[in-house]
Image (cartoon, rainbow, N blue to C red; front, side):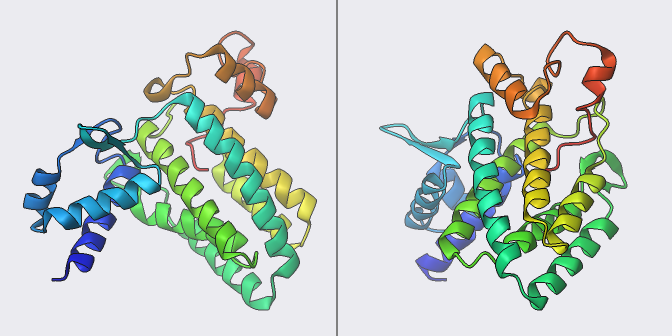
Length: 258
């Protein structure tokens, strides 16, 4: 097997494990151990880690090697802000440029997502891999006609970074959320070519997900500024502490799915 093929295999495996939180944030990545376990050369592992570092999933530390990038409430909010802007641009361009093929592919992606069970039957606390793939496919189909490879590249990177937060935080059992209705709202607006409604729907969808994740025990926002930014962006003054039960329920929608 060539070094390039070895590197690709290690990159794909590590990347999948990091995004799915099978390798936890902050974990040390030992090149020798990875090479031995994967039965590849040290050079292939270094190349894979360098690629992951460029994607922001791995951090290279001087004289210390590599470790999985940590998670923080501040970064999640920053990723969400950037993702909202990019998704809005890509979606508006896609709606304007999308032809019958785009619309057909979007309908197919929506059908797959709406017909795929979200939870693993054996453990309803876990999101199924099939649903995660269908979910990613739906969001990709929405913006696929935007006409900019670079925009799609940036958007894909932000999606994967936010997916890592969703997977790490896991399901939020005390949150009630109609994720399917949110996706339906985005889909209906896109198919109707209603740019304003589509941009509003995607923005709300992404910010609601961040609003839930940032207050989970796995990723509790401790910085007051983070909470203030989150309240402003979602319009949820009572999302963290205080407020009435009804006001908190207005933003509560079951599990994070942005």
